[in-house]
Length: 268
Image (cartoon, rainbow, N blue to C red; front, side, top):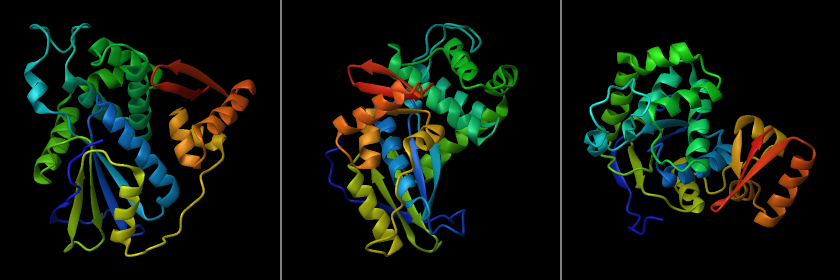
């Protein structure tokens, strides 16, 4: 957890995109950063409980200082090339096949990084992930090398610069009043911090909180979840969460992978 003093930065707000929801959250992540995955877990929980009040825009905030760290003089099409920025471009390429396709690719990417040893996937591995995410591989390869995917990633970097976001993960809260300032929280904090800011931005001390869906429905939306994440979503001890998950595994609904960091569960 970032130990810095929580002093939100402020700047001019943007217009909230969904008039039916009074808040918009810009979530800045580095897809190769474990801290960003943890933030996304907190955002999932917030979407489940308070999703009627806000929309989310995910912004890729890969550090450009890593652009000179790629290996050798290989082209982007060389199977062995690895580079921190490739994963971000790949996500944008996947999103060109639709928002759901982009989310499937991101989830498979994070699952792969969680289960495998390499921290930076190569181009060939990104193709494997695209296949696992059931993307059109030919279209994905064309989009990966297209100006459109590159421009989409550059747009995210521009948003980071304009909002003066220099750390991933970060969250920026905006309300529906374009004249109001936004609230930026850099780093990773506990769920109650984000919940408190959301309530303050809404101007409601006790906004209506939704109950989480049944586990089966949850896994249809988020294909891969950790035991700790399930426990957080349902506000139960990890031991109880694991017991319930094992019941679903015995029913042939889920499968699991035990890792040093914890247990990862996914739909069969």
